[in-house]
Image (cartoon, rainbow, N blue to C red):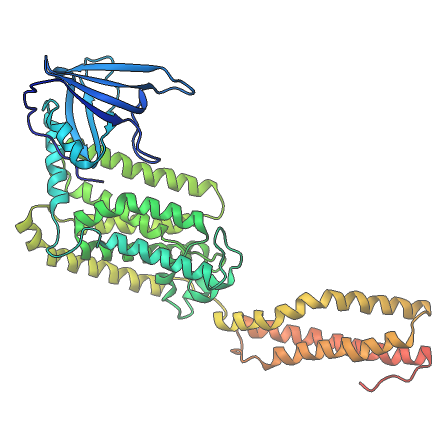
Length: 481
């Protein structure tokens, strides 16, 4: 949200003025619904009247048109950077939605707006005054770009670059889950096994370019507004607490079946904070501000929750957890915009927010489920066992082929040597590697190792019996095993 300014009363014009304008200003910015491309605004002193010239907005159209407005047709003129916009009179048949056009720069946009009528509806005036009050507060000596929101976006982008560029996570989409597993994704088995820091680190990790791009876009839309409403410290506390709530909710819902990462739980919390603020401080918002804000905030939450419930791979539990915590904190930490009252209430609101966050952490750590293994032991087990599991099918096929040859009488002495010199050492290395692991007795990983040891002992015994039997049938001297 940018600051919207109202121009003062339009001055009398001594002569006709022609100003070059345009009706589009790049992707993502509002467009004029009836006109496109380059054009002109002609302001005629008689009336005065305002004539907009440009091309008709239609596919492949080169037709030109002009629209003439009287002073009484133009209401609620506002300036946002180089953009000038107004609302046509309700009685005007052209008056469906904002009329938008762009000047060469913000300074020229202000000059043009001063030459336009100062007809203002009460709701619009109240909305502009509210916006001016909200966005004009700036900390002394702090650059406008030095916001918590911008810092969090920068940190997310930095983590994405490190993960993709240095740790092999993949740029467009994950090429390997291992960097997420090792360096901070949230998972019930790993997080509750003493690695609670994953609740924080997972908030800054993303699964590819689209994931981080969508999350940061959604965050940018609401972050700066929320930061202005609450102030930097309450806002940062709310963002982190909502992210933690999303992480706990993911563990409650998914257990150890999902590796979760992304800022979306915290972002849902930001939208939730706006909801909570609006509900508590409703009287402080003009209708022209309150209604659009509540519609867009609730719309974001509903749409994304429905979207997340339909498509697989989206951790909706984290979204719900972050949203609920955000609404709760938004209600209890809401501050009035007026300076003295805001300063007086800030310590109490901060203490309340810290208390609710502490309750969340204690409850989350105490109530989240625990699992019958230690995560790092499972990781070591996987690292040791997986290479052998990948190789075993080739050994199995060769061994059964040799067994078939033995039964048919076509087994050769060289094949007998392969079993003793290659196959048996393979299973021995596997067994020794598994036994070398330091595992906690009685837990799932240790029980899995015991089962594997029995299987490998049986496999080795079978191979050795086979070598002795095969040596007897072929007349070859069995190798020492």
